[in-house]
Length: 335
Image (cartoon, rainbow, N blue to C red; front, side, top):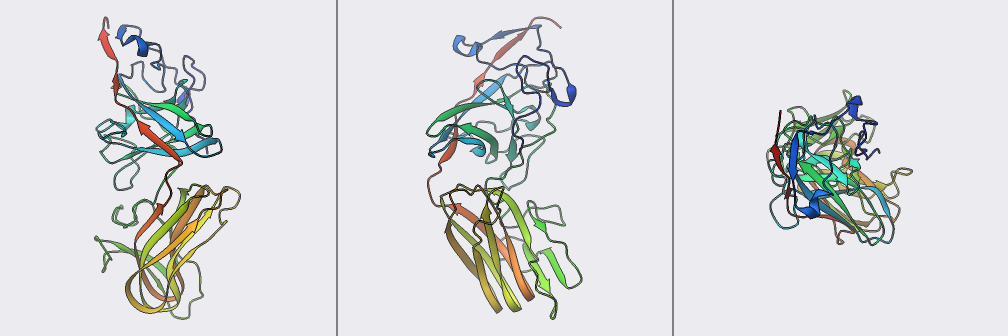
């Protein structure tokens, strides 16, 4: 996973995104508090010759016993204590860098789980970025904004911290956002439906014809960030009609080398039954850093799936908190 943005060298034109060479706006007089003036980062990528006038400090704390490198961490967007005050900021002008000015790829996840790559950021969103932090240490990062001339970035951090769209409510009309269904055939069919959901307006349905071979046909979500050694509880709901075999949910917990170090199964069993909750508690292996989960109908019949959640039961060992906004006052002296 590449976590640093191309064109992240401050004061240099090497490696700019798409080869664009940026120049600082020299026809501006910048006023800032003396303590801030020397630390304000200029020359951020795709600035179109303009300045970033606002920023938010973000402190990442690593309470584990080992160094983390490129580990995704998120901070909630809002106006509350320790939240990043980026409400209404346009994503196109958002940049994230470390204290040296090295720019990082990032992602913005909206309140309902959608990736936000254009337009204003809503309250309740999450800013996700990769963190490098020593064991027991704290590292500062910066989120810059308010550059009306900035172009949007072309690359985003491919990271998801938690289950997205766990109620299957959000999507484009053909598939729920954040989920991928397996390739189907005439005997194994998956659909995003509005028939008798457990909550909300939508759920998933899998149908396998009698006599069809048993397969792991599923709707899945992958690359969820997991903390090795932490305790988790996964909760989900399943409903069945004439199931032979079993219906339920699965989760695979692993790492880059082995995606399935453990594989708890949440089985609702066979037969016909109304909505029932299935639950699995587990401890992630110490070497685990990711998980994938999804629906299961191993056999035949019809099953419906809804309302999946994955919760860490231990205090966060890698966390991020934001400080108050800082502003740069810019006075234009010439064209």
